[in-house]
Figure 1 (spheres, rainbow, N blue to C red):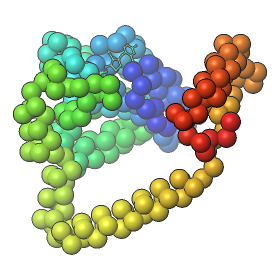
Figure 2: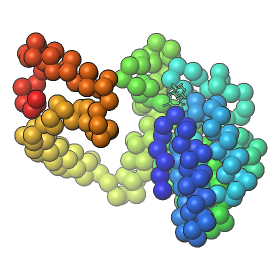
Figure 3: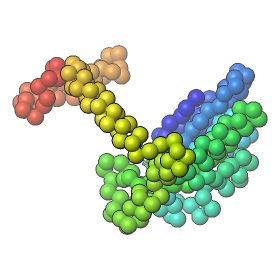
Length: 242
Ligand SMILES: Cc1ncc(C[n+]2csc(CCOP(=O)(O)OP(=O)(O)O)c2C)c(N)n1
């Protein structure tokens, strides 16, 4: 059972789901994610304590990438990272090099065994760096040096590191790489062609996918949108059924 990365509200929910798996006697655990920024929210603490006292089979994976949007970890907390927070709640906690794929695999594998066999929570703190911007509306070069980003992107790149390892073992080569890249590119181009030919969803689908009966504010928005499309048809794709 997987609880994705929203902004940490998912943590207590994952613990509840894990607890229900335990009550049902399932050989399974819940997994949930958060960032370093998420650990400052109340739900992180409620979730961890809840998991510890209920012995819930849940794995908390915290991706400590040094930044919560523009807030560096030094301004996020004064503790030695996140792993100590798990320990403080009596949770078996492990810190791993998040840029080492094999180390992450091994940590998660062990965590899953502990969570399922021993019916208790585990926290994993994966140390890494966010090489991208937080979102499309963020420009992280405004608050951190470009050299720092480049260093992590090039020197500490986890994909290149894993690639070097498989190459050293003789399982991968430049030839395999270029063959894979060109075959994936071909598949992508074909998929794009198919997608471009597919009929686009109706305009009304923008509004009717949540409520059985449209609330008046959405009716109003749909009406306004249709008026605008009529007024400026050149600004809207002609292949969207109105
Ligand atoms: C309850 C709540 N408060 C604030 C925000 C705004 N917000 C969105 S992401 C974010 C920081 C997230 O930091 P982190 O968890 O470290 O994620 P990362 O920057 O590594 O993606 C904040 C403050 C939000 N979405 N929800």
